Structures are given as C-alpha cells and as structure tokens.
Image (cartoon, rainbow, N blue to C red; front, side, top):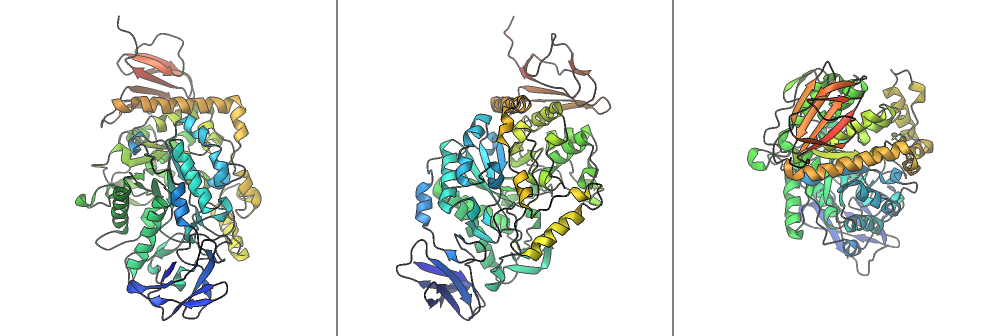
Length: 577
C-alpha cells in the first residue's frame, strides 16, 4: 500500500505506525511517498514532518477517534462496491431539493437512521437530498462548517461504509444525493494542515478563519487537495453533486479561478463515469459568472443559490427589517424575484452602502436555487425560529406555493413540509473548553441588542442540540398533516407543469396597497391575498379550473379570497361545450 503526503518545504517526513516509524522518500511536486507491505484497512497511522509531532494525515479517510486521533486506513474498494452504479438523477430543471442535517433529522442522528425516513421524502416528491457538511469536526455535534478533516466523514453519524449505504439507499429509491462542502476555510480545533504546507494565506480574510491559499506560492498543491476531495465524494461515495459553501469567500485571483478548475475536473469525472454531476454554489453576489461557461468569462458551475427570493418573501411576510432585510420593501420585490431570480441587478443596496449585483442575462431558471427557509436563515437567528413559529398556516401555504411553483429550483429545509415547530439552533461540541466558552460568549454578544438576550441558547449545551431534532410525531396532528398534504400537492402540480413552461418567465401582477399578487406560469395560475381581510382579486383571463384551495361560487373576472388566502388553478381542464 502506498502512503503519500504533500509537504513541499519539508526536509524529512516519517510515517508513524503503531509499532514503527518509516521514512518517506521525496517525490515530484512536493509529495513524499513510501510503500508498506501488508498494510490493511483498520491500520492506524500519522505523519511527522522534520522530526516534529506526529499529526493525522491531511487526506485522512477516517478519524474514528476524532480530529486529534490517528488516521485509519479504509477499504475504498468496499465503498465503491456499495455504490448503486446504475442510478441516473433527474436534471435540476426537474429537481426539488431537501436540505437535511444528519444529526437532527432523526432521534438517533445517524446515517442508518436516516434511511428509515427516506420513503417520507419519496412520497413528498423530493428528487434531491442535500446533506449538510460531513467532514470531521471536533466533538460529536455541530453544523459541520468547522470541519478540519475534509476527506473523513464524521464518526458520530456512522462509518464511511454506513455513509455509502445511505447514498446507495437513496439511489435505490430514486433520490439523488448532494453533499455540502466547505472550501473557503477550516475550523480552528484539530486543524493541522499548516504543519504540512502553505494551505492558508494571510493576504485575505474570511469571517470564519484563515483563507485558503488558492493563488499564492505552492497553491497548485492546495488546489489539488480541494479538487481531489470533491472528486472523492463523487466517485467513491457516489454523491451526485456538491453544494459549495460561501463561494464569495473563496479568493482566487489567477487567470483560471479555482471554481472553474473544479468545474472542469467534475465534468471530466462525469464523462469518465457516464454520470451527470452538479456543482451548486452558495453565493450572495448575484453574479451570473458563476454559471456562465468559460467562453463567456464564467466558472461553469451548474447553479447557484439566489438569496434575494428568500429575503424578499421573509421581509414582506414577517415585517423584519434588520440587516439585509432592510433592502427589501414589498410585493414589487417578490414579483421581481419571481420573474428574474435576482432583485438586486446593479441597484443601490442601503445595507451594503453600494450598488449590488448585475442583470441575470443568460441565466436560466434551473441555474438558480431558491428557498423560503434553510439552515442559515433559521439557525442564525438567536432562537432558531422557523417560519412556522412566525407565520400562520395560510401564510405558510402561500410561502410554499411561491417557492414550489416558481420557475426556479426549489429547496426545502427538513421539517418545513409539515410546518415543524422544533427550532433549528446553532449548536457546537468543541472539546477545547476555552474555544467553547468563546463561541458561547460570542453568540450572546451577537444578539446583545435584542430584548431577549438572556434567552440565547448556549451552543455548547447538549440541550441546544437535542431541541433542534425533528419531532416526527407532529405528523399525526391535523394541522401538520394538512400542511404536508399541501406541499405534496404543490410538488405534484410542479411536475405536471414542467412540460408547459418552456423558457418563458412567469407573468406577475400585483397591487401593493391592496396586498394581492397573481402569477401565471405555464399551465398554472396562483392567486394570493396577503392582506389580513378577505377581498376580491382579479383573475387572469383564460379557462381556469381550481386544483388547490376552495371557492364557494362560480369563477368570475375576480375571485374572492379570505385573509392570507391562496388558490391554485390549472388551465384547460374543463370539457369543451
């Protein structure tokens, strides 16, 4: 078996096994290698650079004893044997994505337990499951954005083979699987990369830690580290794509941006495996270059998140104006988001105190992922409130229709489909007591201006994590069952409408003062009364048949809707006279 590690400035590197130490030999491009006979899965090892302390392998595939423990050899061939090679995912144009956190999705919080809930997702109409980050981080609970062993899935959720089985089981049920990866920074605890090479740079900063060195000296090795990691998840575990965390904090100033290089590598792998693999960027830049191809000066990613949709809907329905919500004002912004995806297309942003975004020319609807809730928008609130804690049921139904009947790729966050009442809080399990104290203190200070300062949960407390787990028993209650049925019906209507939409944009009409909005897209018409009183709303001309909601009279030029009411119509269902 070959052991290899990148350490371009080292004078000597040793492989440290349980009972012996073996000197590695220098190879090309800053790598050090040695072959060890009889090495096998389960063997523990570390690396020592220039006689220093022995640290885990930067490319460790398994850290069963955590970020400070020894790396362990795994049988990669076993992972590939588990993989369901014949699966072909639906294209993003036909996708409904479901974001979930393995640790809180089920009471057990494991890969194996998640399999027991997959039929729920199939019945709902989900096509793509998106797992929050799995790279090993300190402790047993957390969101995953402070991972330090990017190649090793977190032991608290199960073994690498367990993860491969979860992906395979999803495929068996027709579900594609995406994984959230973090390539803009690493967490502070257990981060030994700098002991091996220049993985980080001090020329730029991220809000979360040192920026990764994608364009300085020796950055070729750093790029290989990240790109190989992406290919590992796709090839060895069978993931169908990656969600790239906060790409606006990935700093790459060379002629070929690292995201473009990553996109080329993923397309090459897809061609090799005869698989359609996707890259979806999280970005708040409103920048079409993310999805434009290289001929147009773009990076060639498959899609990116479009935050303006969420911000416009949340601001309008909750009335919240803090932070970036101050930039959004009313139904006009929701209408723009429904038509274009971007609200800010180069106009002045008071929150940023500058112009923001550009026109989404050449950006197709299936290149924008939109949502009304996700882990950030819920969990970065002090008390982790979902929309189900801020809005009434008719309002939640309206939000669901806006998201699921839009022309863009919709994303739901776990439990959203039934209006879950469990919060999704920010939780951590830092083993370094001082780091844990600083995180908890920082969380309190972040929300010190609010009246409920004393109620901000301690991220380090086990209770904070336990409160964030989904309560599946809610599905037995009529209110939650009704919302679930509403979401299922909307997703079914979305699929039925796919063949009638083409590349056209929705036709949107609204009255900001009266608080009503209608949009027609393909063969569907959605009518909303966002007001607190019943009113008559104009109907778009056409032969419309009610398919979701109820009316007590024949349809006329206007439709009477109750307060916060939503009705969905389909064109051309009536029999000819």
